[in-house]
Length: 344
Image (tube, rainbow, N blue to C red):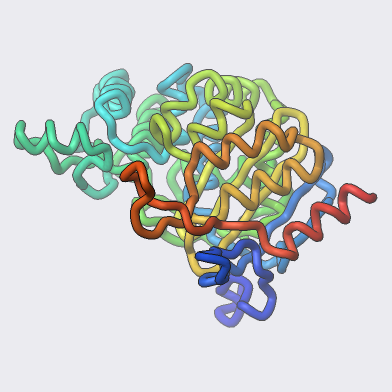
């Protein structure tokens, strides 16, 4: 792409995806784009511009993990889910990543992601007391990095070069992205963790995640089944992606800067980009679109959204808890798109 086109869609090409209502007053509006594709990859609903490139961020992790499986990395169960996780660095998460590294004779010093404190409060307090709070193991992408290292080590490649776009593992990621998404990435930059980050349209991203969720290859089925069996590992207990997978039996993976993908095994898939980078509306939008397509029963979606608690609060209720004075709601454009699909 030329330098003039190295950008995502503009506000003029976006639509309102969700609004925040407080005391009957719409106080905030989330703009973005979203797309729903059927099992064959045909577009069922497009909101905004789903053809413009977006940086996929961690929403691409399932395909990055799949690439490592295709290279023969022997991961299964929780370890395989950590390969695609944006985890909270709970003790469980860190233990699994440590075992992954140890299985090929490597350790935390081989990770090239930043050293941070655990996002999980309990583990942050524990590691602070032990003097081990800052570690690359605690970075939310450490499972992905460990898997990249495993692929390089087991293939006889230079582990120190695992983030180089020309390394064996990153070349395989590019091939897997092209195979599952239907075309090469539009652009490759550097993600927050230091790994290559790929740009593509929301439509191609949704198609790629949909193919994975449908189990189009043996490796894809292995990865999908591991995620569905161990949802705690992909984010953390009570966290949005984990709750959606646990309660609804579908794949869900967020990415930084307001990116979200969801896909049902054998059914439709969704990709969302909130233009201002907020993740707040992305779960709502993705679930609303899947429900509109009939891929998820609305009566199952409603309690999941309630559990994720996107209430707007103000003051204190009579029982001493925060008083609910509003909520995040689907935009008129999102509701209309769902109704139009229902009439089709």
